[in-house]
Length: 301
Length: 121
Ligand SMILES: [Cu+2]
Ligand SMILES: [Fe+2]
Image (cartoon, rainbow over all chains, first blue to last red; front, side, top):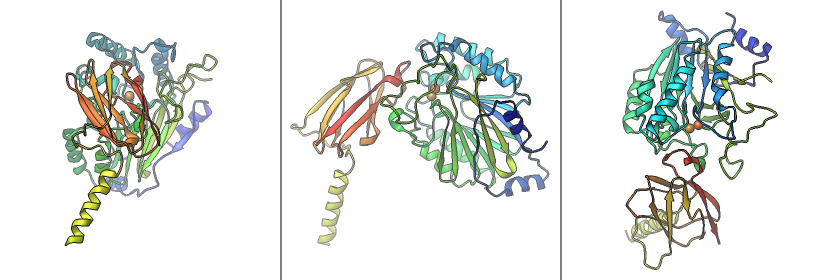
């Protein structure tokens, strides 16, 4: 497959949003060496969906009952299917009732079971996990932090929501340090998490209390990219050489950091339903440690 | 020697004067107290006016679950534990209007738990 085929296709199909080339052009050393050692790397792409808030009801999204289903259909409609799909938290909208929480999780699980791609990774958001320290979440989706490898990229899922105070916590930080320690210095690392690891806008709770400690652990590695959710909008930020990319939500958009006094959802626009919502494809060019992000709408038009 | 000690004393004084100076120091009886009650999902009061440079003790209680109180721009935060009175002494070091919010997730409506501290000259 030629390198830019898929991107061209997405553009031709009128699906493509802004193409944002992230990452710095860095040494291709890691991937070359892996290939040389008999391993293999290969360009691939995955899809990130975030903040589906299943169970939410209210004026910011009068279409909440079908938005997730439409997003699943949109992913299934991609001409070339992604290698995997990742949901970066807030799968469900919070509830005080543990039974209702489990009902929402079961419904969410059943809806996304319709994805054609069966390689799907989950992580919790504070709405899923903060009221019961991730208990219900784990019953349905397993571990809240874990790693997996795919075609030369090491993926690390960090949990900054099971603690209602938004700490990753010492135990998990030690686990992260141990995981990183076994990687080659120039490993291709992608981190998935729910909240921003850096202080994006702490006044709106757009931070992780001990996120700086995770960034510090990642900093010695030249090839790290972070994808997260929580802020319900596209956002790109660098902490030194590490890019952090926030994804849109699939329930309601939130205002740009500090752009209005309150962090209230942007109102539903009946003339442009689903405006500000969407998901993204991320094309991993492993050899260059580059991730090409294409923002995709829930529905065309 | 003497000047070393002096330097240290000045450094300490400077440090205390810095930032909002969240200190563990026991409150002077003369310091004004502002009582704030937290409950799902608001603070009462949620608009507070303070004077720059004047120490104040914020006195928190929660009517239901564990809450947080955080004003990042003034460098102040505390947990609010049920059944306890939690005191937080602050010395606002700049004027302006600063958002405070609950930074311990407490349920549907948690995001609305906000207020402002306005610091005047
Ligand atoms: Cu969130
Ligand atoms: Fe969310």
